[in-house]
Length: 501
Image (cartoon, rainbow, N blue to C red):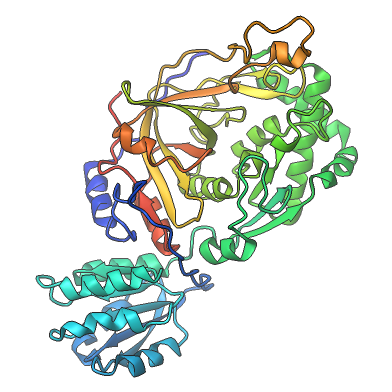
């Protein structure tokens, strides 16, 4: 099993653009670290309109002064902009801002008068609009009031950014006119609503998730899976089993019976996805994975197949990583590796990533699949998981949403040669009368990726939670833009170039 693929590089021009895009996020990279961030209530963003038509409100004390800029907005080719100029009396802000909030719009642009320090208080009078706000600094050498207005808006959770040139303003208009990246996606989780066995999220709900991301999320009981599995076409499952056995480099423990049962789960989930138009599926598998008699087969190998087909399938009903997987896979057009950050070695500047599910086509649909073995689950003698060999030298992006969905971590890295420690037992000196699962239980998951990173101490304090996701390649610009549309801050190192090989 050997594979060595060249990573995807970010150009110097792309890196410079990334630096500029940092101004789009609500906080600059690497500034929103533990001990410095406080949880604020983020205003839900308005659902993205369909089609090309966009409405923009342009507020100013003298709209006529910006006639040329308004014409430039209307000339943007990607969308059909209708611009409504609104005259603001900065001496009577409480009355003036009422006019803004009574209008239906997709974007709000604000310009401040050249004089009058109280004009920055416009942010205090806007009543939490759900549309992005662009504050345009007409005098780029004196931006203090505009910066203060943006800061006041952000304090209230409003998605607001500062533009310090006409070209920058137009770039931001185009970014915010684009649909949210997950708009209209549907996801299904089998388990207790927002009560995953390993990653409970009682502070979230379906409405909150939709307002923040555009994803429609539904929960169903795990018990619904069992009768559905009994109805699966066995010939389809057997065909998938033969294909899997043929593609695997080696079948170590699993029997044909275990492989067939796992393939039934794949056929079932694939049929649900096709029938209901789903983009993501998850099961609270940890609620039964250690049971002597699990209610259904573990979905590990089914997830591997679905990942390679572009479906987000995070383990353990992790809501935040479900959304993270959707975003990272949409941007990269590659499957993600959902993982635990098992270890961070600050001396070697590496992170050890592990889990029992991994994509075979990590490098994309057109690249060679990664070699893999078929193993049982943690030495239990049942179920089936992939053991994938990760390609050394490939550049990757790791990260995911924070627990409140207000922040998104992105961290570049490069896959390093690793060690094979999968056979490490969970327990030493096991008594003779101990159950077989205890005697044979393997300590670590079947997949291990060792990733070299920069700013390892900052990474350690920025881990999104028990889980993160990883994709091959570097996608800094696209992630910044996607987060800007959702009013999400980006947590990242100051240098987004991955380490050298």
